[in-house]
Structures are given as structure tokens and as C-alpha cells.
Length: 311
Ligand code: ZN
Image (cartoon, protein in one colour):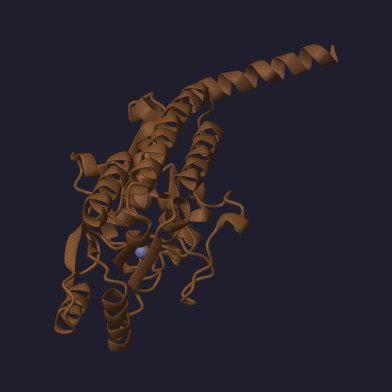
């Protein structure tokens, strides 16, 4: 008798679930075409979500090409996108330094996930300039970005168990491409003569890249663009270029070019010609719809630009 009662209750509960619809007879997910809504901060994370989420996810990124995440403040439109999302992904490690309070608020309402949360601390680089404890630019170590892809896959699968199998398959396919890219970067960078493997950029975004591929990196500004470069930094970097006969320095799409141009000018006055080796995508990806507007294309562009200028 008791068992029958439980069976009845289970049946009633099922009916309740089945009838848990909104006014027009559709559940919220059905109204969105069955897609879950994900909002990410930087394009690099949005790119993972698109690759892993595929047709089941409606993915939006807040920061477009050329945008600096260190200084970024959320607009009213961004807040709306965050409020409407089912899930939020951000980099963490203090990259989005001006959005921390918003994430704390969103955490109470919905899954709000720092995608770097599963990276063991030992694999994070220390931040040299005291801006934060760790260097947040982890996407330049492709092995760490694979770990981040696994975290995103797991979170999507937990949220939407019905489609977990697809997320896992998509995640594996994307990781395969990341592994190929990692190998490509390693092969290409190794063609630069060892004494020329010096990457000078506008800010310290390439620490992980340097560690991964054996290239010395120097940035005019520190880990964050929030710290201004002083005239001492400019003269130090200028002397480094002159002393080490560095051929080329690089500008970044999300950082103003003025400061790095001052360094080039300074070196010229000391009789050493340095050229701009090209524009790198550091904290922001390229325009949407272009090759560089994807993570794979952005990294390939950077590797090719660096190799062409320094080889
Ligand atoms: Zn940065």
C-alpha cells in the first residue's frame, strides 16, 4: 500500500514537471528555441562556448575586438545581457578588474564561473608588478586553455545534462584543434634563431606564451594596462633594445600605440633602428567574422607575425 502511494506521488510530481510551462504553453528554454543563454566576458572564452555549446547554446561575448579587459566597465546593455543569461563565464585572476562586484552579485542568482578556477596554482605565473597575485593571461599557454575548455565543457554539461554527450564530443574536437595549434606554435617559434627570441610588446600579456615556447618576453606596461608606464620604463626598455640589438617590437590591438612608439623613437636617437613587427592580438581577439576573430586564428596570426619579424 505504501509503495503504491509513493508511485502515485512520483506520478503526480512528473505531471507537475511536465506541466511546468509558461503562459503560452512553452517552457522558457523552448521559447528561446531550446537554447541556453551564455554570456562571457572576453572573446577568447566566448569562442570556447561557441565551439563546445554548438547549436544548443546562444553565446554572447561582452568585449569586442580592440577592447581592453583590464579597464573595461560594464555598460547598462552588458548588465542586461548578464541578467538575461542562464550561465556566465569570466576569466578571473583579476583580469576583469572593474567587474568583480558585478560577478559577486550574479553569483547569487545563477552559475557565474571563473573559467580559470580549475588550473592548479603551481601552473599559474606570478604577477611581477603586484597588480594581482597571478598573471591572468592564461589563454597564451594552450595547455592551460585546454584545461579551461574542459572546465567550460563540464559546466555546460552539468547545467544541461540532456545535451552533455554533445558538449563532451564538441569539447574533445576543439581540444584536438588546440593540440594541433600548440604543436604548430612550437615548431614555428623554434625556427627563430635563439638570440632573436625576444618578444617586446606594449604590456605584459605574453608571459605564458614565453614560458610555453621558450621566448623571452618584455612589456612596457605591467601585467595590467591600469598601471601607467613611466619615463623610467621607457628608457629602460629603450636601452634593452639597443643593447640586445632587438630588430622588432610589437603593438597590441587593445593597447594604444603611443608608448611603444616612444621607445622606438628613443632607440633611434641612440642609433638603433627598431621596426614595428606587426600587430598582435593580446587581450582582445580580431573583428568578428574574420580569421583573427577566433581563438585559433588569433594565435596563428600572432605566431606568424612574431616569426616573420624576428626570423
Ligand atoms: Zn592584459
